[in-house]
Length: 262
Image (cartoon, rainbow, N blue to C red; front, side):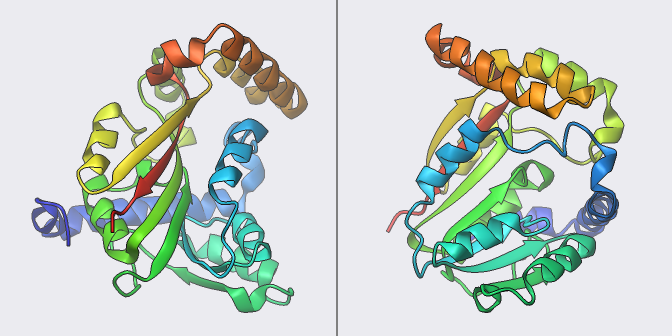
């Protein structure tokens, strides 16, 4: 079952096709040359990664779809916890690198890979226990993708996504000044997008990093150790002053947990 308006959106296939072609070409280049961007090649800050892992701590024998699986590191981590995982990415280059990583490993039988479009996932209805993604929803036509997530999840299933937020004026200025660092079709999530997801799912979300965005500066200058240390230090200050509660809308990252009701 899709949200109202999805049929209307999917009828505009030429525009959606152009968007998907743009995303595929950009990410093929990104995965072929991962060293080219000092900001977006930085790892997820451990604080956020640790929180996500608490949400995915019990995945034994679960069916998990990862949308935008990239080069496969998270697929391996989930498979090592006993899950059966299906990695989907719009980039053929990403899937090629995934196959190199997992093809001959001990977890290969638990990992399945395909080039695919998150607007039309090639899975049966109610296929997955869990769907995950790292910075993928903001690349999509959200209303269409929301319907596909809902269709592919079993009743009682859930989805976990890490996404950038689009309310902080300083981050938005950085985005405006560096358009080459992203595709022209992506758009950081807004509070209104979370409301849209809430039409289909029971949504909970937690925001991270308002003050720590200052650490972007050494990240841009190619100092990843200083970036990681700065994030950690500024995060502790932010928590102590409760800035994360007062200004959560202006944070850099939100982690969304979407529950499909039984």
